[in-house]
Length: 184
Image: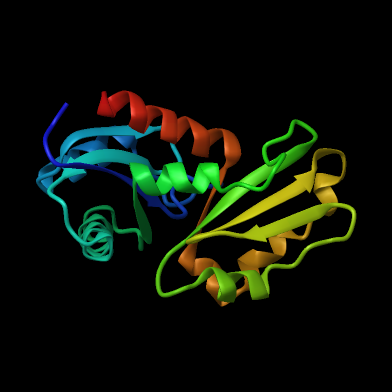
């Protein structure tokens, strides 16, 4: 366990559909070379846990974006959260969120995009989709049996989408569990 605050960087749009390929070992090395400690990644979708001196998350995210974009030649957008913030996101999830009958996602928002702005452009289909606004996130659930008719995919056509990164509920809760285990 290193010193400093534990952070989670959520990188947007890497290793999706064979595009913007970034190897996790190279990503860990790059984050370490930026002076961060206790660096670990979880799955291939750009989840990086690390420790750094306490600092404004916006500055930390901007530095990661700038340096990792330069290093990998892929325009990266990054959302940075602390363990306390991720815990609040999980605890604030709507009742029943994560139920096996639904595919549930947490949409993390990158400033300056607000939950109010993001929620306004999110489309839902009656009897399939449900969405809720949270602090710095949106929660989105679609009925598993009707997931192919969900309107979640429509968000990719919106300019606001570039300021979002999506994690499924299982990944979100696993990341929190990893942060907790690394803290002790």
